[in-house]
Image (cartoon, rainbow, N blue to C red; front, side):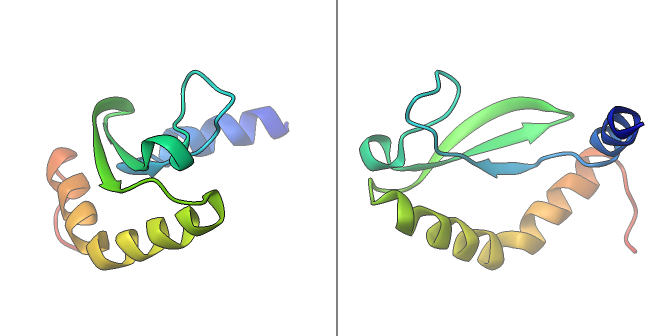
Length: 89
């Protein structure tokens, strides 16, 4: 049952911006060497990666990512609504 709920939620929730850090993975970034990157998704597919902040300690990267999202949340929500033809609330 949990897998069914998780699958249903994954269809409802879509990323627009995403920050990640995992120095041991081939699919994420090491913020201590590459800086903090923001991956931009549209329709579940990554369309680009933007450098947002220079290299920093991993412990600081989450704070910087949260601050960036707080400052730009309305723009990202508007972009998502435009892409998916969602009208104003």
